[in-house]
Image (cartoon, rainbow, N blue to C red):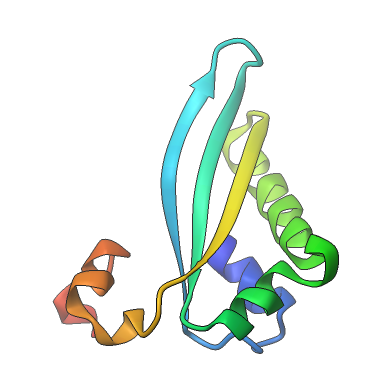
Length: 107
């Protein structure tokens, strides 16, 4: 869902060089919310800037839209924490592809 929002909101400025890793997902017993921590991986610093946007506006939009969709799907309140990291040329490395959930038959 996060990747879908990145591609939609950046209007294809970020082609297929974006991957999302869900680092953790657990229920916070105190707030009764599902806490999700995810990392958006891009290949270049310029792409990171596009995903974050001016003053963090784009990342906030991505997070808000994704959170709403997840809440509708799960029927629970969600706290979504997103980070953007650069991992140069990850699409060219089999180990990185495997880490991001792609198996060899898919590429």
